[in-house]
Image: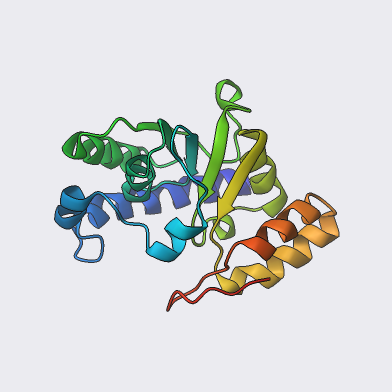
Length: 197
């Protein structure tokens, strides 16, 4: 029951933030609608070629990065977030941009059977795992959505990295896959300088 209370309070927090962020100067939605790209070059450079690919964006918030993935040539892009307000704002932004992104309201740890094994790329960005009680459950969900041979592109902040790697080593789960990913993809924290592992 304690986790359910946390989930309810966390969803309320993200609903509140999702109602504020689209109007904030930080996200600058007017500029985003004009250019439709929020990903930094360092993030775009790590992504595989998305032309003709299917992409799932986990914890997409109100959709700027999700729509950005669509503008990079992906033919199918789905954004997933547990906040109904974030999904509402994302759909509004999608309409304003004239893009064809699908947004789904769901807890990232609740794997959706109709989406399993259907994506070439699963994308997640800064700070997503720290909101969950289990790094293993998050990783299992992320990998469940990938087609065989698909790629997980996950940006992680340095403070999470050490503790996450220790946790995954203790759990002895998918550590070789994650370490392999981290050796080839930068781990980033402001001021956006890549660190190779």
